Amino acid sequence: MPDNLTAYRRKRDFAKTPEPSGRGDRRGRRRRFVIQKHDATSLHYDFRLEVDGVLKSWALPKGPSLDPRDKRLAMPTEDHPLSYVDFEGVIPEGEYGAGPVIVWDTGTYRNLTERDGKEVPVEQALKEGHLSFWLEGKKLRGGWSLRRVPLGRDGREKWLLVKKDDEFAIGFGIAVDVSGNAYVTGKRPPPNRRFRRRWAPTSPTTGEATTPSWPRWTPRGRRWTTPDTSAGRASTTALASRWTSPAAPTCRR
Ligand code: MN
Image (cartoon, rainbow, N blue to C red; front, top):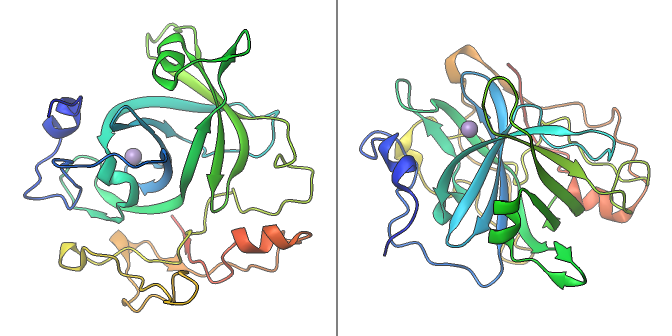
């Protein structure tokens, strides 16, 4: 089956990296999104939306913001395979994007892009440089927009990710740690590709990830620590407490 993953595969040696090659991926019924926290040369967040059988991808140097006044830079990167949606692991030294990757948030999204009261398909909206969408993540919810900005002097394509001003924007008592340090699942990165499988067993009753059993890992002298969850997290709604993971570790650079 033809796909647009040529650039993705050209950059990677699948004998060396634990990342998926994406061959044989199946499309889901509901379109997914993922935000992966990636501690590569510089720490960043990779935002990916399922579109037309691949994950359209942007790198967010500062991650998402819940404040509609914040316009977060989103640099487009190559399309990724659908199976990347739950990839967590360590890309080895010397490989493209070397460093640990965790799933920071994931869920499904809905297209909200309209013109004259009619839905504009996601593919077309992205071509035209403006997409509105609704995220149903573990942490992030509500309306968002992605807008391509005119080319600057450096000639690099840039987009802006902005939270829409709705009940899930900041200022409505929603406590979500978007400063960037919690895992969704509480998983820790595995020490190497021998551990490449789901390393957080899920509870048979709730489906929630249970305490990960892998040993603590120190990537290149960096430590994964547990944040102080009492600070800055006054959770005023029942929903908010569902979205935060009190035991979530923090990646310190
Ligand atoms: Mn990345």
